[in-house]
Structures are given as structure tokens and as C-alpha cells.
Image (cartoon, rainbow, N blue to C red; front, side, top):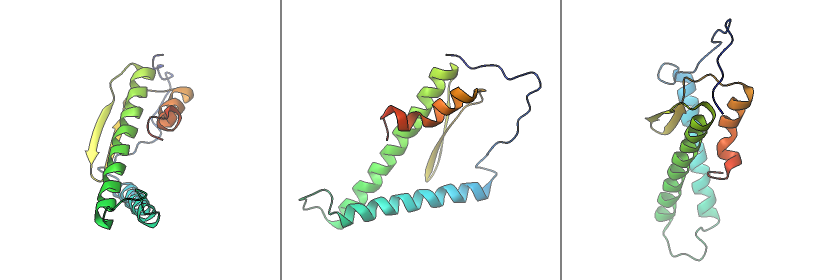
Length: 126
């Protein structure tokens, strides 16, 4: 599958640049922090790992590291599907506490949905 060319009259409707859009960046960072906090809370509440003698601090640290590993696999999955669908190399960015994957390729609806849902549908990071 290759990327399609945009129609001759195509105009970019909008883009999100997290370096310039402080409100979007803060929103994403807030969701990330709340997600990690919820994961740590669940791990502590369920005494994960089960039957472990791990301390609360060790559980929290392991959970935070697991969240970070998930994020890496998740973004790499988007990147893999960008490459498969468009044939172009994805770009990756690290701006703690989040990672991003991007591409300047033009995707039709099917390609965009495929790339967007790839982590959930591939099972690689869901």
C-alpha cells in the first residue's frame, strides 16, 4: 500500500504543533499523568504483583516503567504502520512526559484510520 496524492485543490485544514500549542501540550501531559497515577493506584490497590513482597515504592516504580515501555511500543506501532501504509519514514519526538510519531505523508481515510488504530488492533500494545 502506498500513500495517495492529495487532490489538486487540497488545502491543509489544521495541524497540531505541540511545541507551539501550549494548551494541547498541557492537556496531553495532564492525561498522561492521570493515566500513570491511575495505573499506580490500581497496582497498589490490587497488591500487584500478587503475592509479592515488593514495597509500595517498588510497585509504583515498576508500574511507571511499564507505562513508559507501553508508550514506546505504542508509538513504534504507529510508526510501523505509517511505513507500511505510506512507504515513508515516520518521525519520532520525545517531549517528556510523552512521545509522538508523525509523518508528512497524506493519508486517505482508510490509511489514516489504519495508522491511528494500529496499536489497538495489532495487539502489540493494547
